[in-house]
Length: 197
Image 1 (spheres, rainbow, N blue to C red):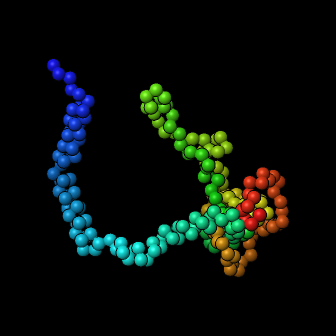
Image 2 (cartoon, rainbow, N blue to C red):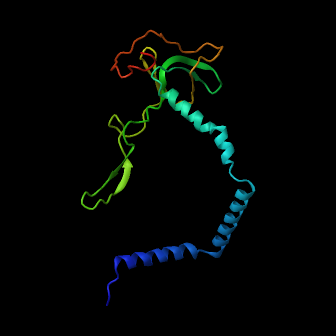
Image 3 (cartoon, rainbow, N blue to C red):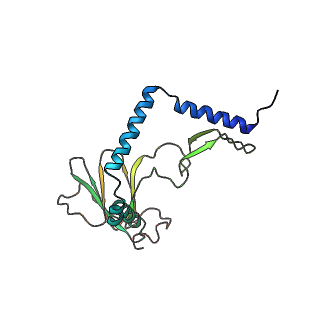
């Protein structure tokens, strides 16, 4: 009795896979043919406007590019307004950098465990601890640093934070105010170069 070589076994497996893909139910095959037909017809009738898109400059990509550059500008100063869903101004701040999520992290958010160094096989993917060594979401949804280096964290309570890179013309007075010259209780100098400092 002859042995089946790995190459033959692979070819047989590929053939079975292809057969399984092409021998589905007739209703599925017919539906796929209809979909392919109308997609081709739509592309023929209204082809993708590549030359016009190139001439127009890919507006959304340009906007995303500008957003990224402004986010990473070390001299950026922004203005944050905390509003209620009814548009009542709760508080406002002048900040350096940008509003960020305390639930973002600088390390992997997931880890693969159960990996074997001998054969390279891996087990399952699990949530990794956050940068502070604990699991689970942080208590706040938004955070930022004021121009006085004070860190402010906002809860996930239905309030709406609005960020702009120029002051907004809001007429109502905020419910909560703060001293712009107040210094933080701790400062690790990690914001050097941000906000013009």
